[in-house]
Length: 398
Ligand SMILES: Cc1cc2nc3c(=O)[nH]c(=O)nc-3n(C[C@H](O)[C@H](O)[C@H](O)COP(=O)(O)OP(=O)(O)OC[C@H]3O[C@@H](n4cnc5c(N)ncnc54)[C@H](O)[C@@H]3O)c2cc1C
Image (cartoon, rainbow, N blue to C red):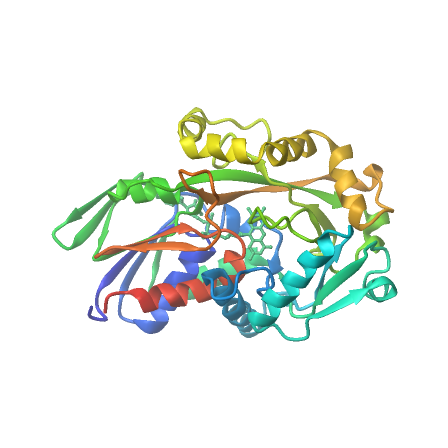
């Protein structure tokens, strides 16, 4: 592939932006067109998240998540330092509150160590309270390398740098049709037609539908899981210093509701993981008939619900009931009261599911002759975005 080749990137979230940014570093003369359906870049997952820089604690050694989180947090931190974007490596605690969670903490310690994290240590009792004075726990893992960042500013700065280097970011351009003619992809959007030799699908919550437009089958499908947050009212914010997480349930790729100090100030609690009735369903009431039918007609969903009925019900109950949400938070910080919580934001995770009902745990990229599809890029893909972009560039058939 010559350096004068052209690329069409679909999706202006962190993964699409980071890919365009890394492409222009490697091929400064390439023609890059990034198509984004919304009015601004970063309108979905990339700015509806916890704002955490994940260091790579949780992920199976050797997995893409482990590799790209470890390298990604370094790349993201360096980018923020160079660009003057607010971020802070403040450290986090993962807290075991029941005896059966303690061995799972040991497994996290083993994974984190195998992934190369530095300074990890298991602490107990009073040592927990020295770091987070209001946290209740039998034991905890302290992860000093984790941090917080302003992903909105990261998105905007990446977009600026892409445009300065000659990349073309076109917003309000929803891709409706994709056609491969000879060696050229033609994308028909709501505002016109664009072409390029190589297609990169980074469409997040819509990635399987965009892949279908390009002729891929949809063996695995995006199932949207909404994550809802509460804010801690100012009078309760002293209860959390930095990042406080539970020990995650090993059956799910979600981390469990946690406390996050935000880089802009304030503390968020969440997110839960509720099946959403629309791919971009930020409110409980949002319902999209097409999305809903698509999910309901997918056998994988029913197998998932049969395997994990308790999980699906509990998350739904927490979504309806502030009291239940608060009970979960009280496991970590018993002093929290429902009156300390005010309704916060929400995000929707693009989580790929297999026909068997199993969730796709790792990042999943499919490469064809002239196209690459990012078909599963859930957390920690915001942290890892620059590393994913670098990997995508390395995958190109040059
Ligand atoms: C609640 C929540 C909390 C999270 N917390 C963290 C965290 O703390 N740390 C972390 O590292 N990760 C976190 N994540 C995960 C992280 O936010 C995502 O993995 C990451 O942002 C994915 O980026 P993306 O570019 O793939 O997707 P997106 O940001 O969703 O971008 C996809 C883009 O594609 C566009 N698009 C879709 N279809 C089309 C089309 N047909 N034509 C043109 N454009 C299209 C969309 O408008 C969108 O802008 C969290 C996610 C959620 C939902």
